[in-house]
Image (tube, rainbow over all chains, first blue to last red; front, side, top):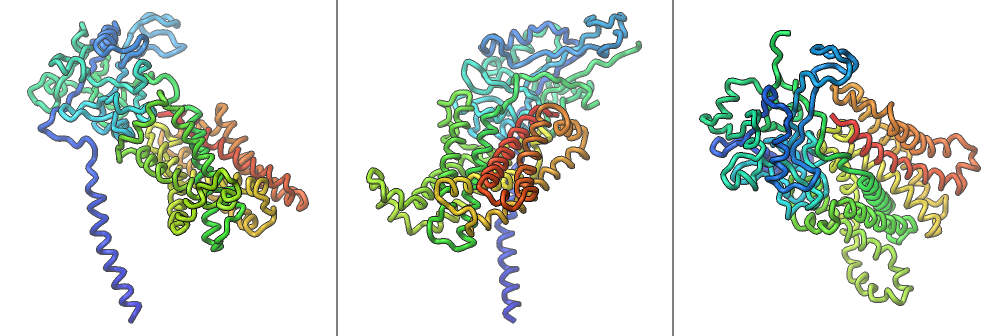
Length: 236
Length: 315
């Protein structure tokens, strides 16, 4: 008999506690849940058009007052040939410079950003109005957790301010005065396109509807907002 | 189409977390591990006096966590910014939760030291001011000790959770890491406190407490080996990223640190000293100190291996 009462009380407690605990588990909203009314700024890098001139990098350094030798974006050169084998184009086995491809290395502006999640002070945060991942330099303690957490290795310490830095689409420099990001403005070949992909009438939305684009390391589930249009080889 | 563009350069230039973080993980593990073992013994054997092992554990816990904090602050890009971590919080961040745990743990460890060294404090005239404080706080000793036991284990586990949140490093991003860090923290913490208890607080080498610790050592070590084995097999049989990270165990200098430091010194050392030597030697003070040093060095090597090899073998 007494065992029965014990069991009943146990079940009651179990029911009551699950009522308390279950909502706690469900209430944690995934960071960056899509909201159609808010803008979702994205950038497209077209590998077919980029010549690797580096103007974008210079413009970025200038717009964001970065210290000498540091920048928020890099261009990685990929060569078409395989190392040790003759270049399929010119036949040289040494570096020939044929079929140069460039890839933009910069903050991927993830919708589900690990740097924002891990930052202990909230210095790496999402701008409320635009949803862009940016830094509050006054809060950053310089722990480098965001740098270790970024799957793209796209964050760095700004030697002048001693705090972490990342590409934020010129949120506080150009966007603040109603202009396009400095790199996009400066690109002579229209290899960079910037805009709101939640707005179906924007050029970037129209472009992404007709062009195939890829994202870097999609397997991490970070949902980057930087998209790449790869070179598609035609013929021989 | 996904995945046919990649880049391999990075903007950070070098490892995000260098050796001071490994040293911090080491100190935090020893601090939590030493105090947790001492309190387990205290509760299990219902001790009421300040035993030599309890004193040694309290002292070690306080000194190591303080040194660990020093490493942490000095590793910041600007140590003067450390206050920001104490003022701003982000409860989604493991580090923030750890800061909250540490800011309760450290004062409580200091309090445990006051309780443990009550007699010594009474005998030093300069410290007489502390005596009324200790007497006043004597009433809450039990709840404090329970809280510290929980927090000590939390601090050990937290160091694992802290780095296992880094998704691009297959060796680090494993769910058993917090458990491994609790087990290795306890074995190294217990070894450090044992050595200090015998050398400084005149504990007998073959006392009841020591016998209990010797008995607990082997299951803890077995758990550690099991956790490491779990990490290794999951990497070996995992996806392409995990398999490439498995290389860390057989190529390069960090593989040597793993096999000589962690496996050879950390596990092989104490096992050989206790079971492969004659009874006279294995019961001697020399063997006792040697196997203690082996356990602690092994643990340091483990932290270094996980942090360095882990960050080098990124996806």
